[in-house]
Amino acid sequence: MPEQKNKALFKQLRGQSALLFSGFAMSQAMSFGRNAIVGHWLSRGDFGIAATLTLMLQLIETLSDVGVDRMIVQARDGDDPRMLSSAHTTMILRGMLTSVALFVVAGPMTSFFRVEDALPAFQMVALVPLIKGFLHLDTRRFQRRLQSGPQMMVEVVPQALTLALVVPFLTLSPGYSAIVWLSFSQAIFAVAVSHAMSERPYRASLNPDFLLRLLRFGWPIWLSAFPLVAVFQGDRIIIGRVFGMEALASYTAAFMMTMVPGAVAAKIGHALMLPLLSERKNDHKGFMQSFTMMADLTVVVACMYLFAFASVGGEILPIAFGPNYHDLGLIVGWLAVMWSLRMVQAVPGMGLMALGDTRPLLVAGFIRGLGLFGAITSVYLGLGILGVVASGAVAEFASLLYVSWRMSRDRKGAAAILLSRVIFLVPVALGGFVLSVALSAQTTFAMSMFIGALGTMMIGLCVGLGMPASRGLLLDFYRHVVAKPETLTPAQQE
View 1: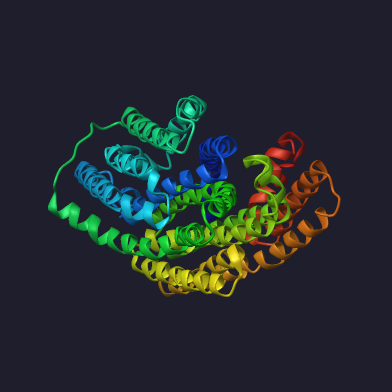
View 2: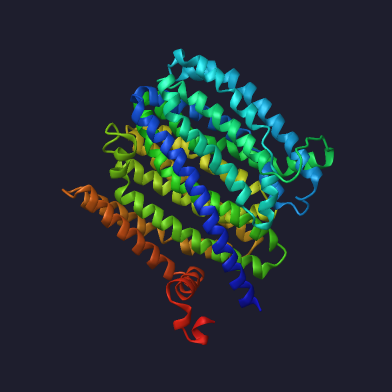
């Protein structure tokens, strides 16, 4: 019976994983394509200012996140209309507050980065969070039943429409101000599609009980965003201030490229892990089976991602963003280390969230925040941008250790399961960096890509076969997809 349940779960995961991967991959690919076009079109200085505009939006949005959408997925009564309407009220208030905050900090931000001429653009972009505050969250309710199609439409359609507007906007407004109009467009499209894909009518209400529950669930997530900003945005703030807009442009290009697959993997993981683990949170054995399977699959993906970017990421960057972005291979590699650790941390993070315990995420955020001190020290010691990136990766690893330990307090053995898989990242990273050095010695771009792709596939196969749950999935894939079922004996088909 448990074996049949696992097979049914694997089948469900295959279908949802394919949908989520295609959706998130398309969304991130279009976002990356938009940024690549902007990077090719603008000078490094203007691209640095555009990156600063995006940085400010991301900074305020991260600092205002209270996990409303995740509570709809996690809560036992997430289907209750009062929960949804209270979540909408919270989103509207969040949008209003963040817009005001963005407008207020626009002046100090432009002065800090010494780009005072860009003040009108910084003030205009403050309207974006207000627009996004009216998103319809009914698509999140579908995710409780692992129905991700509507949310995928909200992810993909606005990105596609905005991508189509990149060249027209850059032609009409040839400079960093085009980013403002693109941000407006994406926010409006996202709100429109979220309403179009929703089943229930849009309602916003002030229900004290549900609002208090949302706040209790979300306040650790909100507070954890502050140190998270210190790591993921603080590095860019330091680089922009100390090394200037052109250095910030180079770092941002490397960051954007490594972020795309990392963000795809993280979003897929969140969309699958939280509902599955929430469903089994009262079944210890079932919960741990799901946790183990997710740990195995996440580490396989993280290893493949890390090897690919550590080995050939530096050669892909100039192709994506233009000839101004050469000789950044080590920075790309260290960013990949940081993102791979971030992927793996999603497993215990979603486990804790499924159990309703979000406070450890706050502590983990502060541990990550310590990476900012390492970054400042690196700059002081003359280690440059590479030292800033390495400091973030070290802080991410420390945070992973803490979250794994904290997960073991709620589910014994979780840390041992996770950390025994994480060790695979070490030889994979070393192999990727060594291959990068070898490929840089008079190897053509096409040959480098071929060797890098072949190596990445081999890494995925070897790591996947090295862990029980992923090995079972690989064998299941072989039996039902690669091998023709009619050629198998009844025993093999079982």
